[in-house]
Each structure stands twice: as structure tokens, then as C-alpha cells.
View 1: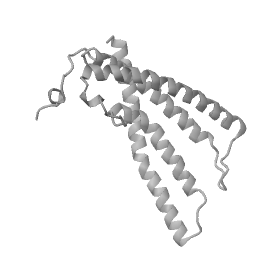
View 2 (view 1 turned 90 degrees about the vertical axis):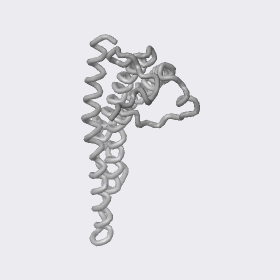
View 3 (view 1 turned 135 degrees about the vertical axis):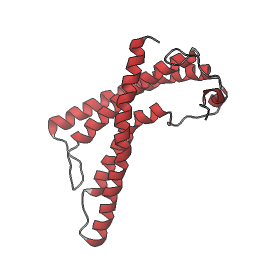
Length: 184
């Protein structure tokens, strides 16, 4: 692969690693909010904001963590035939799938940008009794989708190299898992 593509892939993966790690620890914020909700419902007046804040934190968690999950290869894959294919065949199949995923994500980003613009322009609030502004979570949504698009493109380049029987850096690809696994 050309050096510009390799640098792009490493840059995107570094960004997604950073935001993915932040999102990963966001689960503790959500647990804290839900714990506070439980305590306030038991001993004090119930808080109006806790359930919706937990929902916002959960949405941030999976939107910012999606690209990181893809980078690590932890996303769900239906393995009827895929596990029996050679690494080259898998790379080819994954590169085709990446094209469809980018297409879907572009439409999702387009809708997210429109929704975010509306929320910013009109000061959109939630319909709940807490009524928080929706713009912050929608900005996170758009940012998370953009990160996912970038990671999908980076993964596409890795898959194209894999379909050629090479790594991104141009080294020969291991044919089996046992060859690729480091020895201790």
C-alpha cells in the first residue's frame, strides 16, 4: 500500500483508539448515575434526570465505541461460511462489505447532521419532564458516526491488502491463525 494510505490508517486508528478508550470508561459514569438513581428513589425524592442521563451516556458509549470495536474486530459477524474461507477470500469479502457499510453510514451521517442542525437552530429539548437540550447528544452522535466512517475506510484498506495476501505494510499474510499467532 502507498505510504499515504498507511499513514491515514494509522492516524485514524490512533484517533479511534483514543476515543474508544474514553468511551469504554464511560460505562462507569452510567453505573454511577444509575446507582444515584437507586439511592435517590429509595431515600430521597426521585430525580427526574437520572434515567434520561443514563440513556444519553449509553448512546455516547456505543456511538463513540463503535469504531473502536470495529478496529479491534469485536463486532458481530455471521459465521456460516466465513470461518472456512482463506484469509485472502475473507479480505475480499470484507472489502465488499465495507463499501456497503460506508454507504449506509453516509446516509446516517446526513440524517444526523440535519437533525443536529435542527436541534441547534431551534433549541430542541426532550419531551420528558427534565427536558434537556438535545444538541449535545446529537453532536456526539454525528461525531461517532464520522469516526465510524473513517474506521470503515481504514478497515477497507486493510482488507484490500489482505485480499492481496499481504499486510498493510506489504509483508506476506499468514495463511492460518497458527502462523499469525506469536510464539511465547
